[in-house]
Length: 213
Image (cartoon, rainbow, N blue to C red; front, side, top):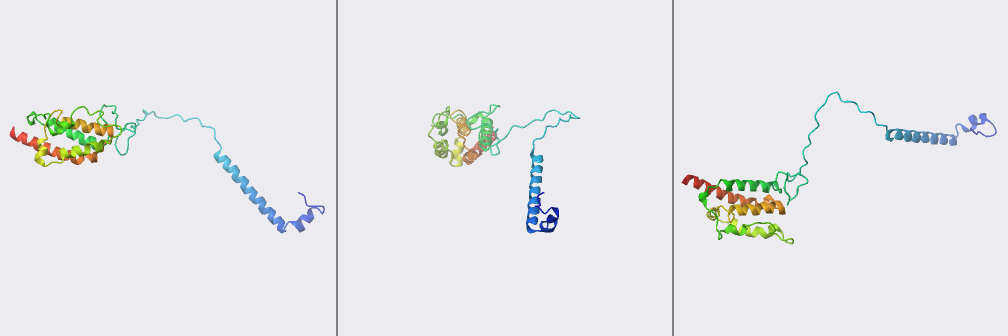
């Protein structure tokens, strides 16, 4: 410590309680706090050596992880419209696929007595392989919404007349809708009212055939 030429007595008498001394003490304490803070932070964040793993006392089979799902569609995250699931089933909007499943079930239970659609049947325009029916610059729903409305937005008696089997009838319509859902992302809300009205007419025809049998 440097206390000048008059020695240590001068420090106790003149410097110890001076404003300069108090200022130095305050500065020194602040520096000590900063230094301790730095050391504590270094100790906390410094990388530590990994500890040896503790051997398990019991043995369990490895966990089974579920495949990730899409919260809005229920599909696997890697699946997109236009692809096929590992099971071979088409993918797309879960609501639309559910409607199509009900539609197909109603087609399959119809008896042969309802007849097969001919070339002049209103649904014949939707028959054939739908692959490539929508151009690259076309919107799939804009292309088919009006034609579907023209055929399916009919009075109940005309809807019942649509209930015919075959590729030019209900099966052809099902194939087209399944293609639009799985390859062009058509949502269930767009086809819900159309299919529900048609399926109601199919139920009426089915019941009528049962009563006539």
